[in-house]
Image 1 (cartoon, helix red, strand yellow):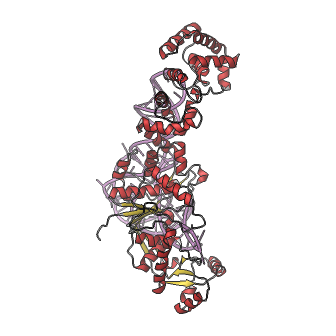
Image 2 (cartoon, rainbow, N blue to C red):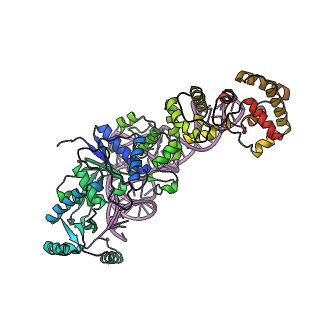
Image 3 (tube, rainbow, N blue to C red):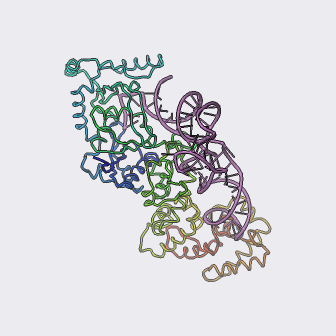
Length: 499
RNA sequence: GGCGUCAUGGUGUAAUUGGUUAACACGCCGCCCUCUCAAGGCGGAGAGUUCGGGUUCGAUCCCCGAUGACGCUACCA
């Protein structure tokens, strides 16, 4: 029994979308398992019947997969300790409750909600810890049984011994709670439904979990769980409580701080490897601490629970974006094309992705080459590349520039040159024409380029013409849902709106 | 109220588990490149480690206290 294979679990409740905080917990569990050669399993905590929904479970699994995590045991794939959904393990919990009741380690409590509320109020007034008095603990077992048999409803409470409850936490060291601060808490509701603290403990023990890695909001629950381990005579696992992720206002990260669900990160075009890298850094640092970018394999190799930091971390979009840009640079072009394409079909700018469409695929690859360095998220791509399909409305400032005497000279010369051209425009030819315009008007630098770019794209700033011109010319030859105007067509369209 | 956890630049992390001019990255500022916007390259500012006491020849690091933030205090998870 020395150093058993580590077994860890991620145990979300399917009551909503997977959130960054939970995703990080899942990631750390997974990294730990991979690093140590252990097992990572998924368990669904759906004892809250009111809020749990099957669709969330499916979404959860999809999000975890997207993040790149996998597990060897879980709800859909089964495993040696199945089932992995708590709602399907009710019988197991019931058996354990009977055992505890039989051994007098738990007892039936007939107190009403009103009685309990009174106790709480009293404790509050007397500035005492609000703990259950243990009133029903004194009830003789046979007496309690008769009352239960008579149909009186009851909850089951654990008889918590009055002794310190200690556990070891890998990121925080030894933690101790005085016994009297933990009351005889409820294991099973009067509805018969067992309570979270009870079932996690049973499941973790039965599933042979060796390391419980979870959010630090569970740290105050741990002494209760320790009491349960002790009641059953089970040995304790190692614990590792991860700090909270905060918003920039130092409050617990929530929807109030904007998008925080994993699904929303995917939608906006954050690459999973970037998110994983970022989340790994949020509360952990490799030895030495100077390295920031990691591949998945590097994370696995470097990750140690001992290096997880105990203090809360503020979520920082800037850094995530930096890591995302880095991931974009590293990613194979074909993968990026796959990921980026849907944003363009959604706007009716590209047809649905089809490998046969070699010309469109190739052209789009170059569109990406040009605009990818300018985005933090893939989602921003269409807006950056919008000028290919749409001439943006000219801003007042730009309109004034065109209307200025110098601007007007350039506009006139340039449009005349383009109209006089016969064939397709090449970057070389374009450059020649620009030089001619320059010579004729005396405009150079931004005085020359800005008006021209406004005519061509609607804005005075944007990509270099060398790269843009071929994209416009070739794009105009493609059969796309929304036509890309050629240089000439742009000049015509511009003249039409101005005249 | 009780109990618990946490505390290094704006942000995330480092700092031979007591000895450093407190390091790296993001962000910010400036310069270079450049018609522009990004990208890229170079450089800079920014903390004396929440505060107050100890222990020590010496504390970011050990102890005590305060403060603040957060969590638990449910027949939620």
